[in-house]
Length: 59
Length: 559
Image 1 (cartoon, rainbow over the protein chains, first blue to last red):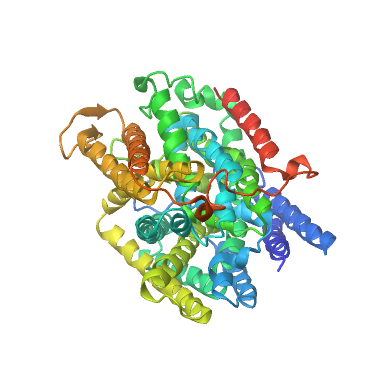
Image 2 (image 1 turned 30 degrees about the horizontal axis):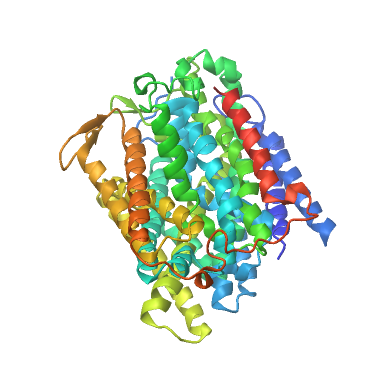
C-alpha cells in the first residue's frame, strides 16, 4: 500500500471539514480573531492533495 | 482574567471535534487492516521483512520517539527553561542521529540481526544479549504504560473524560492495529501521526508567537535567559536548568542522547526495517531534517505562554503549588487559540502522539520478547508459523501489561520517577558498550557484560551519593547539584566512563573472537556497498554534513 494515498485522503477530509467550519461559523477562540479553521483547513487540504498527487505521479 | 484551576475543565468539545477523532480512528484501523493482508511470516509481522521505503522509515524513526510526553513535555520545558530546551534536539538528538546513521547502521543492518539484543549476541555472547533484552523488554512495557497513564490523566483533566475510558479506548485501538499488521502497521500509523502532530500543532505555534509579538516581542516580556540557548551556560546558577556547559555537552549531548538514539531498539528498529543498507543508513540522517525544526513547533508555544502571561491579555499559565503547572501549557494555549474544529484536530494530534508512543513500544517489546527471549530460551526450533502466533499473542499481553502499568502509576505516583531513574541507569552505559563493540575488535563478551553491569551500578551509586532537589543521596551525600537535570547528566557521565573503562580492562584480560566470527559486526571487517556514482543527497555522509551545518547555524541564531 502506498501510504501517501490514505494520508492524502485523511488530510483532504480533515481539511474539508475545517474549511466548512471556518466558512460557516467563523472563528471563536479567546485570543485570536483570525479564521483559524479556514486557514488551517486550507493548509491541510493542500497537503493532502499534494500527497495524492505525489502518489499518482509515481504509479 | 481567566484562571484555570485543577478540576475545572477549560476545554469543551463539540460534535465536529468528536467526528474528527472518529475519522482518525477509522483511518488508523483501516491502515492496519490493509497491511494485515501482506503479513505471512513472523519476520513480516515483527521486523517488516526489511521492505519499508526510506521516506517512511525516516519519519517513523522520529515519530516512534515523538510521544505525547515529548509534545507536552517540551512545551512545558519551554515554559520553564526557555530556548535552552532546544539543546535536547540540537545538541542531543541530532549529533546522535547522524552518528548512528553514518557509522553504526552498517553493523546493525549488515549483521542481519533482527533486533539490537540479537546484534549483541552475534557480536558478544548470550549473557550480554539477555541483559539487554530483559532490561529493554521491561523498559518498553513501562514506557508504554506510562504513555497510557499520562494520556488518561491529561484527558481527565482537560476534557473530564474518565481515566479508565481514555486508557481502555487508546489501548483497544492500538491493540487492534498492531495485532492486525504488526510492525508495518505501527510504522505506517506513526508516519500518519507525525503529519498530524506537525499540522495540528504548527498553527498553535504560529498563533501564540504572533500574539506575543514575534520573537522580539516575546523576548521583551520574559527574562533574557529564556531566549538564549548558550549564553547563560557558563555557570549553573545563571540558568533555570542549573547546568553548566560541560555537564550539558558531555551528559546530554554525548552520553544520554547517544545512549538513546544509537542503541534503543525502539528507534533503531525503524531503521532496520528499511529496504536496503543505504536506506537504513540514510534513515536517521534524513530524519534529522524535520527533527531539527521540531523545537519551533513544540518549544516555542511554551515560551510564548510565559510571555503572554506577562502581557495582560487575559491568559496565564495555571497555577500549581507556588509555581505553575507547566504541563498544562500546551492544552491551555489550545483552549485560547483553537476554535471548535481545530480544537478537535489538536486533541486528535495529542491522542495520536500518545498512541504512536504506545504502539512503538509494544512492537519493539514484541520483537525482543519473541526472538530474544522466547526463541532463545523457551522454544528454540519451532516452525515459523509458531513464532508468528507468539508474536500476535505477545501483542495482546504487552498491551495488557501496559494497561496494568498505567493503573500502577495512577496508584503510586512516584513510580514514574523511579522508572525514569532506572531507565537512566540502564541506558547511560549502553553507548560505551556499542562504541567499543562496533569499532574495536578486541572487545569481548565478558568485557561487554561486566562493563554494562558496572556502568549500571556506577549510575546507581552516583545517584545514591549525590543530592538534587531532595532526590537521591540514599547512600551518603557527597555532592549537591542545583537541579535533578544536572544530577542526571553527571550520573550518565560516570556510568558511561565506568562502563568504558571496565569493558576495555576486562576485554584485554579475556580471549577475543576470531576475525571470521566477526564479519559484518565490527569496523574493519564489514563490507560497505560502494557509493560510486550515487548522487550526494542519497549518500549518508554528505547529507550528514548538510544537517550539521544547518544545526550549527541554528545554535548561533539562538545563542
